[in-house]
Every structure is written in structure tokens, then in C-alpha cells.
Length: 91
Image 1 (tube, rainbow, N blue to C red):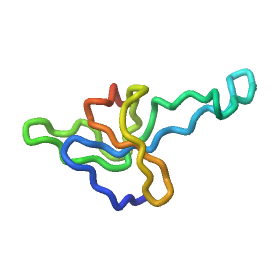
Image 2 (image 1 turned 30 degrees about the vertical axis):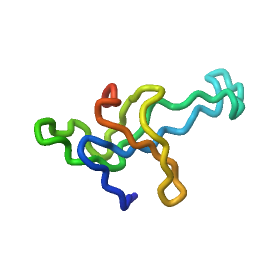
Image 3 (image 1 turned 180 degrees about the vertical axis):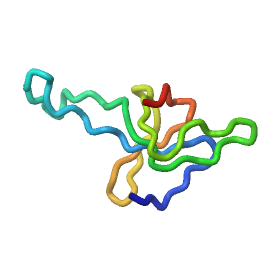
Image 4 (image 1 turned 135 degrees about the vertical axis):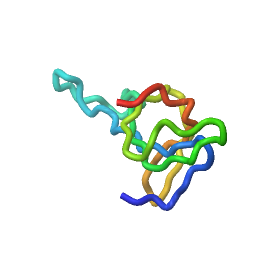
């Protein structure tokens, strides 16, 4: 997948993981009750700040805060753009 978008400085573009459709026991979760996913994949990353190089790269599976990032649409696909500091860790 090739995104024609380059985040600046310490920002990353994240494709959120899909929300859970069912519970482990098989109960289907309605759209209104689905929790916002906290995992995603980095699809584009800035070059970092002069004194702070980026520690995430394209393809990393990450964990981020519940209210992290701003939702944007590129080519009909929904992504989150956030600062690297909003990322808690890499899987």
C-alpha cells in the first residue's frame, strides 16, 4: 500500500486496527457499543525533530492512547495522525 502523504516532524500516520466484531464467546457487538481500537499500524512517518530522531517506522504495529490523534480521510480510507509522543509502544 502506498500513501501519497508525508507527515512532518514527529508526526505519524496510523491505520487503526478494525474494531472487534464479536466477543470471545461469540456475541456480536453492535456498532454503538464498539470500543475505539487502541492498536494500529504506522503507514507513514515524519523524519523526526532535529534533536529527536523517530523511533517508529512504517509497518510497526503500535499501541496508542484512547484519545490520541486526529481522524483524517485519505482516498476514502480513515487514518489517525498523531505525534510520536502519543504512542505508548511497539508490538
